[in-house]
Length: 266
Image 1 (cartoon, rainbow, N blue to C red):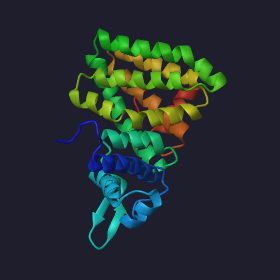
Image 2 (cartoon, rainbow, N blue to C red):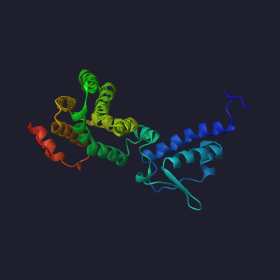
Image 3 (cartoon, rainbow, N blue to C red):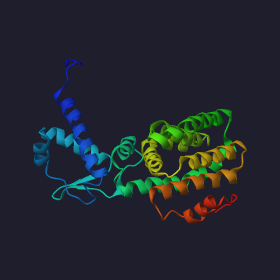
Image 4 (cartoon, helix red, strand yellow):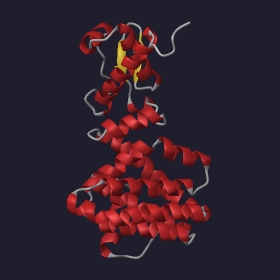
């Protein structure tokens, strides 16, 4: 019987393979290796990383399972187009958060998901949120309120950003829809990337804080229309902070925001 405390050759290959898969994922998600790029042969990868071919095969199998690469006999191993990647896998989402910051294509797609869905989710939350959901939003908002000034003055982003995503997670969960609750859990690292990047480039977090307050109050008052528009305004500003000028409705919404206009449905 194999001693369970002693690593087997197969376990060692998988462990090393995981590290190599992580490095190769970094190269892909950062844009260093673009879709369509052909990976070197297994022997060359093994030499480059000073590992066995078994470990290389383990790494490539991981990336293949996640849809990041495709292996074809006689054609080698190729990086897949973004649309083939399994973005709803928690590992892929984590790699997006860890490595995709320079890759604006991935960042834009994650933002577009939020821009399309979150106003609808906020509207649904306004009709379904219970006292526990509202408390979760309030607690996250209080942390944001306590830390926006330190972030603005000293560049301390972590507490504000962590509370920011907790605030939005609470709204997803307030829909009491299993699918939305699971999606926000799976995509949390990727959504965190968008929030962290936009907070780093935002001109004024006090204004962001006020927009979050309006969203929370709209949900508390069960005003589905106001919740939709409040969430849309947050996302339009996020798109502006990220430099995505093609965000639908952004110019109109931002003009209203800067003019101090009343709420209108875009």
